[in-house]
Amino acid sequence: MVLDRIALILVIIGALNWGAVGLFGLDLVAFLLGGQMAVFSRVIYSLVGIAGLWCVSLLFRERDPGGAVA
Image (tube, rainbow, N blue to C red):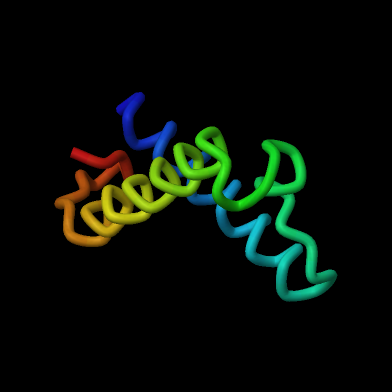
């Protein structure tokens, strides 16, 4: 499903950003979009959070024998 892939991409972006914060003390989203409180940064943070909630649903979905998500 397209929405699942978009959510997964956003979650990966969030994970990479948190990895950069943890390893290098660099918030890439804030750096690229004008600070943590900038409108664009807050939109990205919000979308990543919503995507994370969406991805929780992937854990509880039934799968067919071929491995595809139903």
